[in-house]
Amino acid sequence: MSRLFNLQGKTALVTGSSRGLGLAMAQGLADAGARLVLNGVNEERLESAAAALRQDGYDVLVAAFDVTDEASVVAAFERFDAEGIAIDILVNNAGVQFRKPMVELATADWQRVIDTNLTSAFVAGREAAKRMMARGAGGKIINIGSLTSELARATVAPYTVAKGGIKMLTKAMAAEWGEHGIQANAIGPGYMLTDMNEALISNPQFDGWVKARTPARRWGAPEELAGTAVFLASDASNYVNGQIIYVDGGMISVL
Image 1 (cartoon, one colour):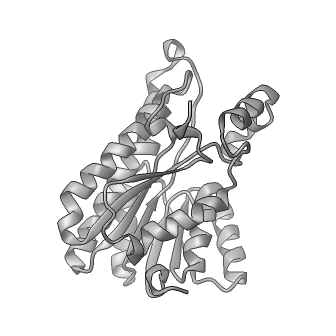
Image 2 (tube, helix red, strand yellow):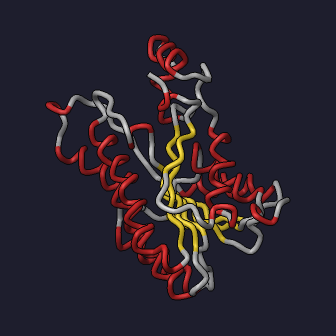
Image 3 (cartoon, rainbow, N blue to C red):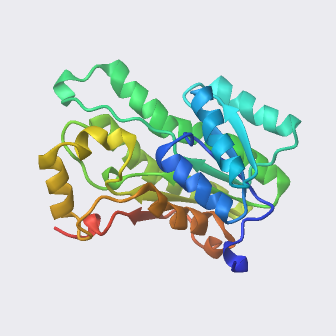
């Protein structure tokens, strides 16, 4: 493995990583040598994912906490401190979707999506960055955006606003923490084959629209995010900061 992409000796916390995109990116980071800290709220699913990765020879820890509960996030980082676990790489992946026209959207549902997809990235990023700065060895923060970091689609307003916020949160992190050797960047996945998109994948009309609209003429696979995650977590991206890289089969580049 090239030294530039070697993550041996690094510990990566990936939020929302018991399945889907988070698990795929976590496995990619482990393939590059990182020790993993998997996170989620479903402890049974989290332990199952960790056990499967351990069977493949990866070094995996678990941290079950709700990213929308600030006290729980802070307590988790305090536990890491007490156990001597230094988070070198943070992937803010946890997210939810909620589809409803804005005129029918309850404020509580709006807030739940914003809290999960945007505020949690700020809170976890703040706690990780504090410790990275104190250690003086820099670090990597990878936020997960979306095509909706750039473009809106009807019925997903809170998700669109949250992911647009992720783009600017990433730039704010770069502006404040870059001088401390911390690089904050984002990944913008296109339409991916995940549980969260199951209703869309099984809808022939929407499936056809995705394939026609995407130059690659297909949906993306979760593991196709792994290479970008490893790049942004590694020394290969040490002078890349405040950017969002779209992994979308070319969709955002064409009319």
